Image (cartoon, rainbow, N blue to C red):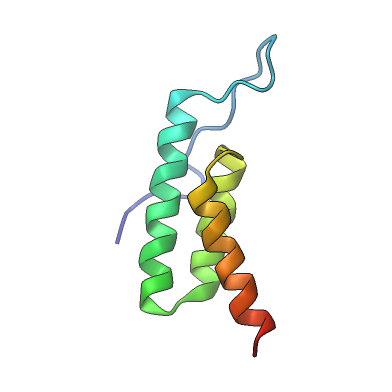
Length: 79
């Protein structure tokens, strides 16, 4: 299991260009996505959802995390 703490990941930088995502945030987003994927595969959809959401907070352009979150929402809606 990846050992990324939700309190340890960097956030977007506050610069003159607020739409800029740091490389650190981009990498942390990928790590959160991968952790969510592990949880999803194990059937722990709540933890997967948390990690996918964290990935999107770090990088709203992370389409893999958005797709993972969509799949979880579809699974919950089809119950």
